[in-house]
Length: 146
Image (tube, rainbow, N blue to C red; front, top):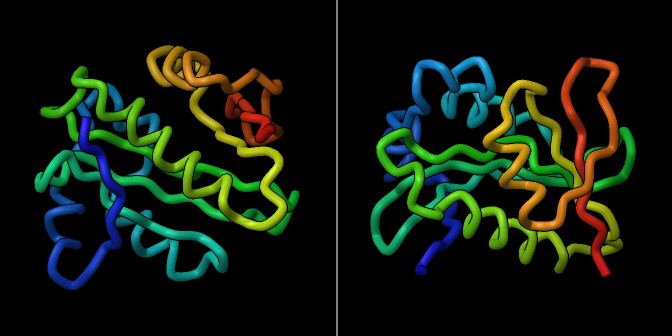
């Protein structure tokens, strides 16, 4: 499967904000518009579009969190029309590959809504291990880099 991560640019940002998750999933993830704005104020974070071949199918945002010095996947979404095709799993693997090239990357963390069983199962299938509940209420999981 050909999944690539590409920069959000002047040419593609509007396509990115048009991507949406289903109505029931909206409580689990911030909008791409919000995330693109937020990343402007997060040092050491990147916002990237997820492409299958030449079609944008999703969005991700990740980087080094200064609070704990771990790398975090803050956002990962696949457009509702593109879900169920394996794009999310392949996108996470691309994110992991990118992060593992970063200096001192030993642990990659994610946080997600406790009721989001689909994403829980997805991260678990890739090798993320539950790490409890964050003070802000999200389920945490970590991927140890070997």
